[in-house]
Image 1 (cartoon, rainbow, N blue to C red):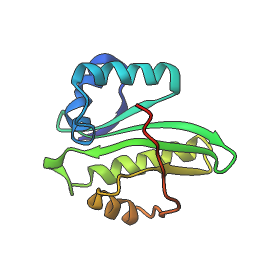
Image 2 (tube, helix red, strand yellow):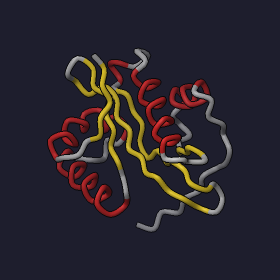
Image 3 (spheres, one colour):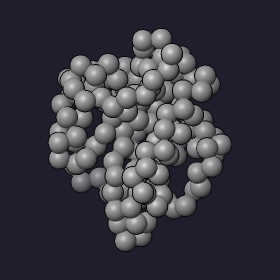
Image 4 (cartoon, one colour):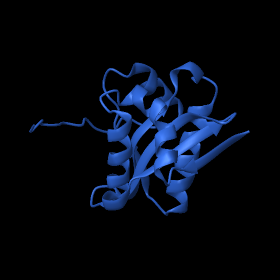
Length: 142
């Protein structure tokens, strides 16, 4: 059975770490749990996980935001399926769940950024009907 839920406590967040670590390898489990909790408390971050056969297979971090350019939107910070279980539909199911959350929250759009080197992810996003709409620029300050 496949379920999707929100990680609402440290144990659930910790269960998501092995999957998230594939996307965010710079984080330790302890740092991950602490940062997710900080982001949940102060920035509206939510951590959703797809569980199949009792194991977390895919994870998505997201927030609801609003700006002049896009109106109300759901921003996906993180979206990853565990590498050993890709192409089994877990990513598609979790992404469809995110779209449903955005619609239920009366969002105008859904947005995400993806590293330029993540070609497989780009193919997935294009299959899911996302459009490449802008370039994202960054300046490291630390």
